[in-house]
Image 1 (cartoon, rainbow, N blue to C red):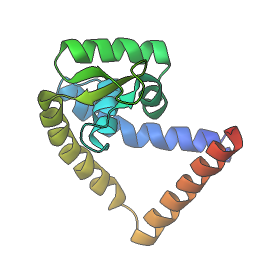
Image 2: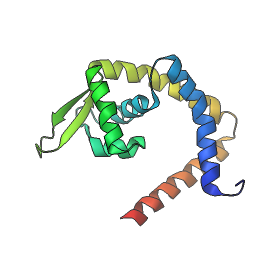
Image 3: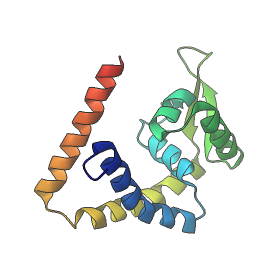
Length: 144
């Protein structure tokens, strides 16, 4: 398995993520909640995302995503609203409480990332990021 790309990617992700996930647990935030907050924070203000879009971005199955979102809505972190183009589509956006929470978490995430990346040269970091982006893009194109 030491030469199998998928195992290497999974192990690397787990090793690096585990450090940050421990920080999240210390703050009382679950990984799925963090992923939703971070995903929604990257959208233009008020645009929102669908449950399916969030499930894909957060690496969760849609029923699990719905349960996470129900809890987050109950906790005042997100709100659901009808899409302006198609009222059958439900979009989610951050509430002010969710925006405040994610702002603090993004600072911690960026600090963790900087700590991890400082272990490598800028050239190594850019090369691996470029390769990963390319792998993702090619896989996305292959699915279509």
